[in-house]
Length: 171
Ligand code: HEC
Ligand code: HEC
Image (cartoon, rainbow, N blue to C red):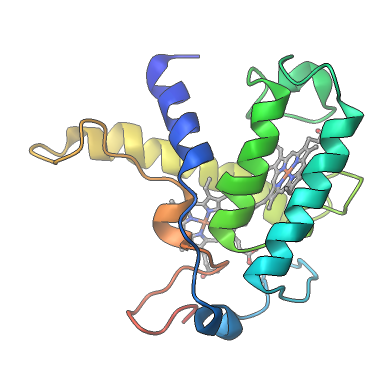
């Protein structure tokens, strides 16, 4: 994997923001795109994610460092990434960034399936964030960061639907 790509993966995996406030969460509309889910509080979502990650980790025990593409059944984007690290991205980069549990994108236990549109959307969002970072941000001169990066948290900030106006999350 080229250096810039692994850099982005790392940032994505680590940088899930502090999450939205309780009040913001309460105003988050139900997920679109056909995903059926009752909105969980950030705390419940976090607990649920932790539980599922533990379950999956147990199932792949001893193979955490093997490429996700050989450990899991239907991996397209994260093929070359260690399986354990991919799960951390699921938990923090995806779940926490959007303020959801795993079941926003998956039917629990049937992780390889493509039955929730949010899963496919997430792949396209990943590609979009990488394109913004590599094609656009990298060409803007005089930015402060050495490698300015856009990831899921940059827009979602703990919510399924990014805000369009300040003070009106989920608008
Ligand atoms: C925002 C959507 C989203 C969330 C939330 C999410 N996932 Fe995923 N998950 C995906 C996508 C997309 C893939 C496929 C990645 C690829 O193609 O490289 C995937 C793949 C997987 C796989 C591989 C399945 C296989 O056999 O191919 C597992 C296991 C998994 N996720 C577990 C989890 C767990 C556990 C959580 C919660 C901690 C979670 N996911 C949260 C989108 C999500
Ligand atoms: C540049 C801003 C931006 C970035 C970066 C971004 N998103 Fe999004 N995302 C959006 C917008 C805007 C929508 C559409 C909301 C709507 O329906 O109006 C959206 C919608 C989604 C949805 C559908 C929500 C639903 O109802 O289920 C998913 C899933 C999603 N994003 C996942 C991700 C993931 C995972 C990442 C990181 C890989 C990411 N997004 C990065 C802006 C962004």
